[in-house]
Image 1 (cartoon, rainbow, N blue to C red):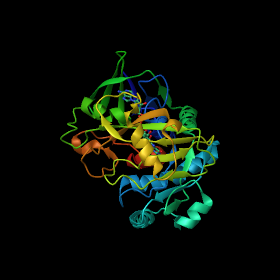
Image 2 (tube, helix red, strand yellow; image 1 turned 180 degrees about the vertical axis):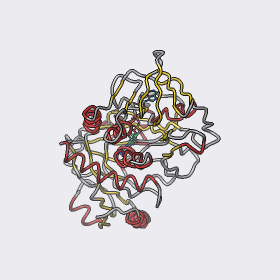
Image 3 (cartoon, rainbow, N blue to C red; image 1 turned 90 degrees about the horizontal axis):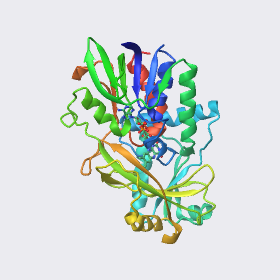
Amino acid sequence: MEEIEVLVIGAGIVGLAIGYKLSESFDEVLVVDKESGFGKHTSSRNSEVVHSGIYYQENSLKAELCVKGNKLLYEFADKYDIPYRQCGKYVVATSQEEIFALEELKIKGEINGVNNLKIIEEKELKKKNPQIKGVGALWVAGTGIIDTHRIMQTCEMLIEKNEGMIAYNTEIIGIEYIDKKYEVAFKDGTKIKTKTLINSAGLFSEEISKMLGIKTEKNDLKIHWCKGEYYKSSKIKNINHLIYPLPDPNGIFLGIHLTINLQNEVRFGPNAYYVDKLDYKMDTKYKNDFVEAISRYIDIEPENLNPDDVGIRPKLQGPSDEFRDFYIKDEKKKGFPSYINLTGIESPGLTACLAIAEKIKKTLNY
Ligand SMILES: Cc1cc2nc3c(=O)[nH]c(=O)nc-3n(C[C@H](O)[C@H](O)[C@H](O)COP(=O)(O)OP(=O)(O)OC[C@H]3O[C@@H](n4cnc5c(N)ncnc54)[C@H](O)[C@@H]3O)c2cc1C
């Protein structure tokens, strides 16, 4: 049986970033994906926002890796000519009570190490953005948008340049831990041995742990799929920043926000609802929720909203749970040393991808 040093499961943005970073230090790194190319799941179905790190609990991995990842991602984009725009965003308050919430969010962000946060008053908000309806806003200068496809393409190129390997159409269907090595079985009947196994399988990360015999429910590693839909609008123009409401009080999502892409097209979303089936079909029954949520911060007519993308979040936080952090661990305590388990890598996973990769490199003592 062929043997390699490191096997990374998943060629989404996180798996590819890990593959790239580890291929700098290890001779034999293989990234595999069951699909025919990179980023066929969550990594191509998101808001493409480089988050600042204001939202997450103090000392959480989400806060730490988002703040670090934001800086690393912009540097990476500069170095490899990846299109991005650090356009900043407004979190808009629509009532006086929400102004207090903005102030709390600002403090939270500052505790997390986010710089250049500023509360602006209604007059200034209106002057700069006549279309936005609000009584004030939190200005977040570090937020931006980025070409996610190009990040993945660049990581793929760097893995190959460092003599790492990537194999598509390569689905893992079984894993055994034998004599301090992982024996990984593929759907085509072949097998490979590896000392280090990295689970970056996104929506399917729970399935990978189950293949090893880890009792995911007992260990609080159950993944809940949470759908998010987008609508686009060609009627709204001349928007130069992202516009967010205050986040959902249950912490399930950031609220239906307005993003622009690099071509300045306007998109709204995502909403959030839990699903059992992996199905990227748009359910237009939620359109009214969009109209209601958007109308609080900008005028919109239902006929000016057209269905766009759909993504699914791999969440550890179930419908009635509190905040859950990223889970990134060497599972040696469970009897699986050098099985690095990444579970619940939802937002801000895109922003954090390079910081996650550096963390994993350190975990493996490099
Ligand atoms: C609606 C939405 C909006 C978001 N917006 C943002 C945002 O604006 N900013 C931000 O920072 N984050 C955002 N995120 C989060 C971000 O998109 C994710 O954190 C990130 O894409 C996760 O990447 P990943 O590589 O872990 O997972 P994925 O991209 O899902 O990759 C996992 C890969 O593993 C492969 N795989 C699974 N099982 C197997 C197997 N058995 N064998 C082989 N391969 C396998 C899959 O085919 C897949 O390609 C958003 C997410 C959603 C859903």
